[in-house]
Picture 1 (cartoon, rainbow, N blue to C red):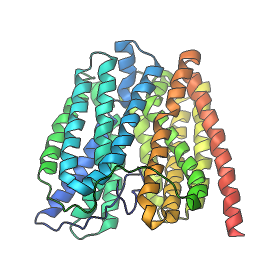
Picture 2 (picture 1 turned 90 degrees about the vertical axis):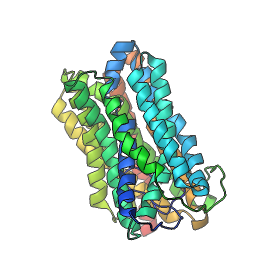
Picture 3 (picture 1 turned 180 degrees about the vertical axis):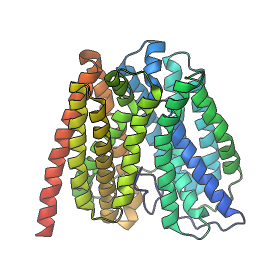
Picture 4 (picture 1 turned 60 degrees about the vertical axis):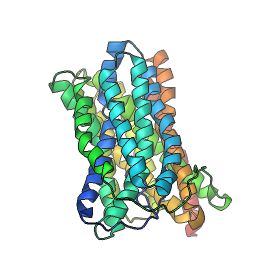
Length: 411
């Protein structure tokens, strides 16, 4: 995962140290690479509104949903740490083509799923695919941008990443609700849409190796550990909310609304991610400490409203909570990654960012396992409410730490 900067919306690396490849048709390759990134992230979030149906069909609990969700992160992290430097060493094409094929296999496993074992296998394949592809795809975008404009490449990466994260639940919800074969058609559609991506990755230009391959061991230099701790915690909390929305909130929405409409469940996730992306684009360039403080405050408010919405069974309040939480998530993460980029020493930049990614993906995958365990005892609505309350308190604690630190630096 070799980077020069990060895309603000997802934390995907936005550039590589490799020189841009200027070849005829590179504009077409640029947009084909953006399409591939969009489709990879769309596919990994297709299951989001379908978990309720899997629960009913295969007879498992919300705990199993969170474990299925978390195994994706367990597979993704080592893949991310290995494949980033590997693509610098052996070339983008040799990493990206297998990654896209793995993504297609993951969707095929979902389409064929007849029990929970298939779901675990499919999520592992998706985690390996996205972990391998995320760094190499965003690096390829930077290298293939026709005018060598890395800012434009980063913007396209941001739009493609967030578009995929939001489009997956929405597309699956619409197809599952209004088309036949609700647990098959979304994944068959993804496989068909990945065919142009396979062709595009197979025809990428050869790139010259820039480094010798070695697995990247996450580490944080001592001088930046204070900033890493506070900013890492802010982004960890921001991504616990993403994990909650991607795993359990669709079921929460159906219980709260009394509707089994899968498009509604997927739409709530898409709304949250859309608000996150819009907030980041609007706030780009603003001071990082203020972004983190404002984001954590909004996250806390959104989480409290999420809990209250469940208590009073109010779908409109849930949508308000989704919007506020999405904006807060976007600002907190943008501020955190900006601050990490500022303090990371140039010779350890990738190592620090690798560690930061591990923190983020742990935020996505680990806390929701606790919610799943809790849901088996208290029920889903109560578990989500308790989780939201605890994370809101942690947001306020980190907000206080960051505020004190910001005042001390300004004095």
